[in-house]
Image (cartoon, rainbow, N blue to C red; front, side, top):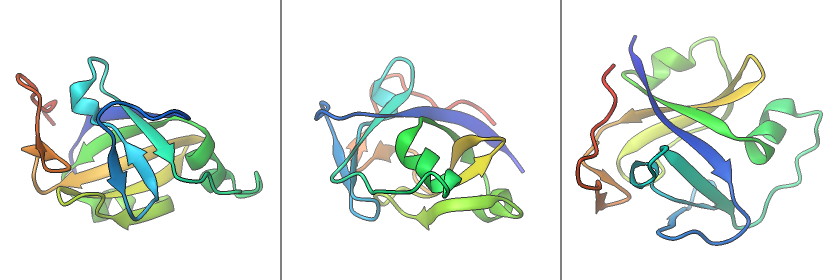
Length: 130
């Protein structure tokens, strides 16, 4: 099983330049490949009211996440506390969020690294090697 760093996701309350709509989760997201520190900004249509007792789901909607590109989403999810997904956000990957060691982690199994929501990658962008 292989994985490589992909991005960090941070919540935003204001519209961000270059947002893309994710129907499944009802959030707008930016392209982390276009940010020098690989940051993806997420902005929900409406933030769900999740009680703190649902720790994983509450952290998903209220804390940052760290995302990794993986070679097999199903293998990386085995035995983990899946809190959201899996789903396809925009025709290029399957993703799922887990809670591990108190941190929200997103795993992405890309089937097409050539774009983000149909937009070509920024010039010079290359994925981190596994």
